Every structure is written in structure tokens, then in C-alpha cells.
Amino acid sequence: MATRAAQRRERLYVDGEWLETENAIPVSDLADGGTFAQVTAADPAAAHAALEAAHEIKPRMRETTVVERAKWCEAIAEGLREREEELAEVIVREAGKPISSARGEVGQAAERFDRAAEEARNVVSQGEYREGSTEGHEGWQAIVKHEPIGAVLCITPYNYPLATTALQVAPALAAGNSVLLKPASKTPISAAILADVISEVDGIPDGAFNFVPGEASEIGDVLSGDDRVNAIAMTGSSGAGKHVARESGMVNLHMELGGNAPAIVFEDADLTDVAGNCAKGSFKYAGQRCSAVSRVLAHESVHDDLVELIDGQMDAWSAGDLFEEDTALGPLISEEQADWVAELVEDAVDKGAEIVRGGSRRAPEGVPDELADQFFEPTLLANVPHDARIVDEEQFGPIAAVTTFSDEEEAIEIANSSDLALDAAVFTSDHKRAMNVANRVDAGAVRINGAPSHGMGDIPFGGNKDSGIGREGLDASIHEMMREKSIIL
Image (tube, rainbow, N blue to C red; front, side, top):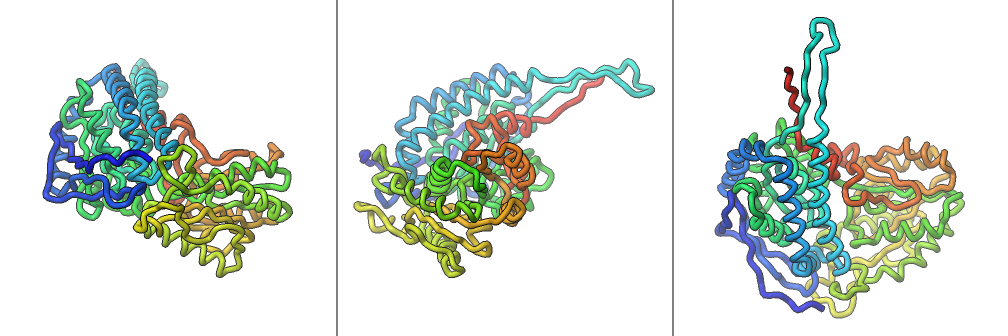
């Protein structure tokens, strides 16, 4: 186990200055219990100061070149790598993520800044030249170029507190925008370290990056409802996203929200491969991922065999000391989240689902008593009825819920019954069927013969229905965070 660092206190970063307010947010230690840090909580006055700073710097940011901005991003990437061990420990403690995953997240965040630099170069170099092609406009010539959209509000989640933050902040800065970063209140410390890294980069103007942690009830509407904000990038729940959309007015909304990904398994699929993918898809980071496999739709002829194979994978997904390299699972982010998972499991069982394994709270040995109720066992449910809430609602817990379908039509009907439409997976050896189902399933992305995954952000990622607006990813996000200007010669 890592040696516990001294209690740390992080501050706001507004217009190039580190600031304090009267209030602070304590950050729970999900490895050792208690708290390990505090972060100054922005109040409405601080939020307005950040908004004004981000607004005032827009003209200067538009004058920066893509070469300058690419160098900033590369310097930020290097700064993150230099602080890898510190960041990894912070992610373990604030997010409850095993150390191996936490280190991977730091590397991913750094690479996203490097790749944002390259993507920005590509976008800026791909303007258009056009000529008039309608009567009366002969001889007209025009160039269509990209320019920054303005000020971007980044609202980031708890489950990937550094990697998802990078996926928003990196393209925003690379595109030449000013940034206001509002991290999740449960996991603000890795974002504070990112703010410190950015503050040390030569050339980034004061006001170009502002770090404003705080309670959503205090500053959320102040930030999202201000007309000095030109775009909002948000990752979070569908409910929170709808609230921000109602408050925001005429801005570019760029939202990746809730998920309830179905894995549709046909009778000709390689069931051993399916079981491994579904186990990882359901249990990684205790299921607290919007792209997690939340429901397994198995053809009725293979349901029992698939359940047995998934059960055989579950010994590898055990909870333990978060600083041990072989630990696979940690606690859920809060006791309330564990309550929600328990509620969904209880509903499924009451309606006829069978608990094959797990199904209750169980903490590993040595866990502080105050964290015990945040652990939920990896759970396998079989023969889940179609009317169980877990089939349609986002769980964010370590649950593999297996239900059945009789034919392709029923599989698509079940998959599309949820209000969430972020991700899906299709498992079959029939290419024609795979493509047909992928085209008919209502989801922002469908993976064939694999669990949902989007790499470093090179594949557009986002959802339909209540799962979001627009698509994120480095190239996709940079386009969303720039606007086109036509100059007619």
C-alpha cells in the first residue's frame, strides 16, 4: 500500500492567480478512509470572475497560432508524465480506482494532449477554397477557415477524472479557446494538478485556463447560464445534462451522458470470447463507466452456456487493496451509488431474475468500516425479465445482467427500449447479420464482436436519445469547438 501523503489543500485558478474562498470541499479517501484532501469551493463571485477572465481573453486567443497552441499541449502532456506517480495515487484515492488502471489513465490523458496538438494542426490546415457556381455569382472566390468558438465550459465526471478532463480541455485549448474547468466535486484533485501543470506552461495567457471547482448547486447554473460561454462540453448523467441544456441558452452543446449498453449475443457467436468481453465490459472499474456492458441479450438457445462461461470469468474480478497491482475492483464512488445498485438488483430478483453469483455488499478484508458499504460484489444475474428496471436504466455498478431473446427482431426491440442509446455490441459470426443489427440498433456506436471501446478519442463517441448531444473525440471535439468563417474575395 502506498504511504499516505499529508493532507493537501488545492485552490482555485482564475485569470492566472491561485485563489481561496471561505469554503472548501473535503475529498474522501477511497483507499484508506477519511479524507485526504480539500479543494477550495468556488462561490458565485469566483465563478463570475472566471467567466469574465475567459471572456476578456477571447480576442487574444484568436490571435494565437496553431503552432503556439500545439506547443502548449505538448508541454502539458510532458508535465503530466512528470507527475505520473503523484497523479496515479490521487486517482486511486479520490476515484477508488486500482493503481494499474490509475497509471493507465495518466498516460491516456497525456497522450490526448499530444494528439490534440496534431489534430488541431490538421483541422487548421484543411480550410476550403470555393468559387461562385450560381448565376450572378460568377467569378466570386471565397476561403472558408476555422476559428476558435470562444469560451468553453468543461464539466467533467468522477469516473475518469483526468482522462475525460483531458478529452475536453485538450481540444478546447488546441482549438484556441479559453477554458473554464468545473470538475466533479467528488474527484477534483487530479484536475487541480492538471491546473498546476497548465499554469507552469510558458505562453498560455492569463485567463485562457480557469479552474473552478465547486458544488453544482452553488455555481453550476452561474457557469452554464452565462452568455459569455460559447460552448459547453459535459460528461455526466442524463438528468444533469438536461438541466444544463435548459440553463445554457444559445451555445454549442457537446454532451456525452448516460449509457446502458446492450451486448447482443447470437447463437453462432464464439461464446468463450463473448464471456471474456462481457465480464470485462461489465466489471471494469466496478461498472462505473458509461460504455460498460450493462445488459447481455443472449439468444435463448445459448443463454445457459453463456451464463456458465461468464461465471467462470468472475474469479478474476476481485476487490482488494487498491495499491496492489493485481487488484481488479475497488469501491463504488459513494454509499448512495451502492444503494442504487442494490435497488436495481433487488428489483430484478423480485421480478424473477436468478442470482448466479454475488448480489450483495461485501468488502474485502482490511477495508475501513466507513468504506465497507461502498463495495458491491461482482454480480451475475440470469434469466432477467424484460420488465426489470436494470434492462432499461443505467446502473453504474458491477452487474452482468443476462436476459434472453428469441429472434433478431426481439433483440433489437429490447435493445432499443431504453431511453439511453450510447453504446452497443453485437456478437455473431455472420457478417451480414452483424451489419444489419448494427445499423438498426439505436446507439451512437456499435462494436462488432467486442465490448464497447473508443480508443484514445480517434473514433467519434457520443449517444442518441437521452445519452447526449454531438460526438466527442479529439478530431470530433476540435471541430465542435471551432466555428467556420467564410471570407468572400
